[in-house]
Length: 234
Image 1 (tube, helix red, strand yellow):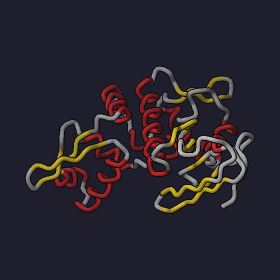
Image 2 (image 1 turned 180 degrees about the horizontal axis):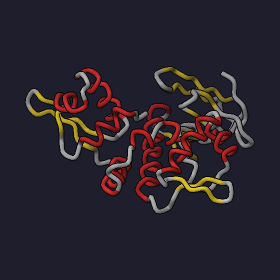
Image 3 (image 1 turned 90 degrees about the vertical axis):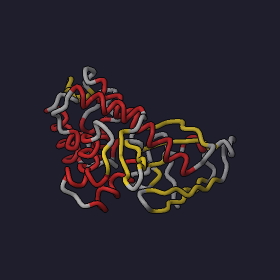
Image 4 (image 1 turned 120 degrees about the horizontal axis):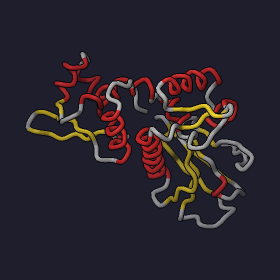
């Protein structure tokens, strides 16, 4: 997930910058910059290109990177490294429609204090509005809304490629995706997947359940329960 250093790097990339120059500008050692850049490449924010002995970094042409770039052009002084933390991105993924604080806590699995703090910060910058005790994305911040939507769509596609190359996403919200593997088109199949979830291997097994009902969370490394999603043990 993008962090403070990653967003600080993104801000500096108005033009391609070498990793060594980024280290000097941000006051970080070469190995730290390289590690963060590699992670940022995987998440589709930046690209690396070599010129002789130097490695340069530039902003990627993905939809979420372009939306974030447009947001920065519109609001260059806003601290995106504080605004778009992991918990904030999870919360914002839900706020296309109004939700109460209790709803957000239940749907994200985050604790109430974390959700309250994130919403307070996002409200301070006008990203989130409160309407009739419910919170919703401010439609005036179109680039912010697009960034969040495109980011999670990109992450969902990348996660699915790690799980099932021929899979089809049926539902996605934040870090949670449900999918169908086209190799198992029918219902009531026995299916086993191995997926890399935050650097750990998770095996999902489903017996006598429609694969359409599996809700997978790469954040928690678990199959979630809900009124429409049966509990699975593994």
